[in-house]
Length: 158
Length: 158
Length: 158
Length: 158
Picture 1 (cartoon, rainbow over the protein chains, first blue to last red):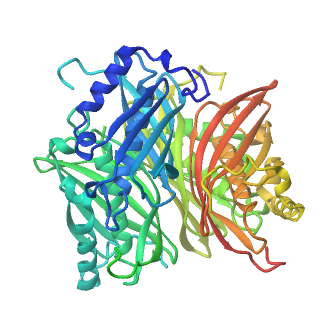
Picture 2: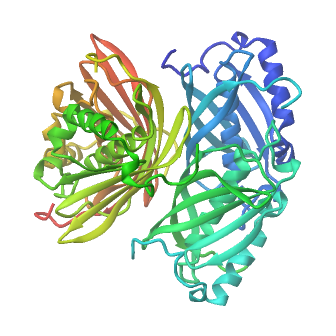
Picture 3: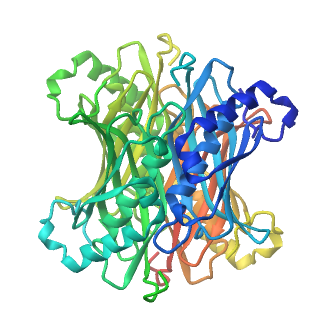
């Protein structure tokens, strides 16, 4: 159990099997596919998810909907926690809190989940979401998330 | 400014114009339409949104994705706040916190946003999300949200 | 495991031993004593704590300090969770979120912690704090809290 | 309005008058004095508050009470926000969320409030609390806070 952000560790620390497992899980998430989200970085204790702008993910003013912002933030944190778990463990979000700091305006959103503390039962992640427009990156949301480690369901039931 | 939940008030208290305005705003939300969410109740200080189960709103185990749960919870709270605003005001979510209490399993989800406190600048809402399965209603998420009143954008720019 | 607030249950449902245990724990809290807080109601799934106004619990304008408000809210939720635990279990706060809705102004504050969901590992509580002035009760804070059940420390080590 | 943590800026950026103003406000907080908290660092967008261990700030197991941890975290964030305000503005906490990551055990706690985003009306701060024991620093709490800028009360009424 440590108290430092884990994302500083070398990406090599993440076994290819763990990475494959997370990619497979991501691809089973109907909502991620439906929104058009992409898993773009998976390192030990840190995961990035991107969401391109299109009308299907907007609110009434054409900005990214807070729900879309939250969805990729929550998933980025969940998978960041999972990178530090053994193979026979799964993760569930207990709760999260998100501040919507600026309008979600740009070509795509990038959510970054970073493990702050990985305990035996509970994990705490930092959540940051950036809007990227013509190479300019602006923070649009910041939050914190609590997750719980649970035994993985037997294969085939997922 | 009062401290009591406002949803107890008669639905008649909500002018048809306010209701029409909220319905129109909801219909402009690309994400709500994309997910298949429906605005099912709009009364003074309380709004209900339903989301039928389908693969497009699930996570890797086939349950409702926490992101889908959050999306309808956030929108229900936002519109609940808006029911108490004058016509020339709009609402933005400042932040929210949501506990995911039970797996989102059922025929549909129902999110209920209820105004706890409506101030001049800030509004605080309670958020509750239920899963409904064969008439059985189970709470799956509970949270709290802070919103800010902002001047409405001129017509045509929304 | 149920999803309804538990405080509706008869107070008789709480064994005198549980009540004595909570009272003893409260009395060991140096901070509660130092602030002058009092445990005023302990029923199954709901606990009330009161804090009289005095200069020692104020902020720079003479109102109750948000820290004092939070402290009694957190403790009320923790003990509310504990009322539903077996004798050999203890409770720790995982996290909480609190909205400070109105200035903490009055003769005393009353914090009410209510269990929303009591699970095997995690409990979720609603937190409400009222200011009472000349019999008038105003809500000053509302929040939500996550707690974890842990094995009790052996007697004498507490 | 910017999106970067402000604490990186040189401490010199903070006018002595602003620093004096914050120190004076801190000294008027009855609760801070009653707990024995000390304002130890005030720079632009970042404030540190320390709280020495003593029985008056503990819970039933002798650790720092979560309420004490929250109190100094909330104040550190509030004053961090205030460092970026003009002289005629005051700050109120709208809400905060805090994860209690490890038992508050040590010689003293150090809370660090850092401005994440300073807007015209609302400010968002990151909150971190460390326990220090024999030079060892461990994170014990992490959170996020929303604050609102309000007009300062006329002199003499504070």
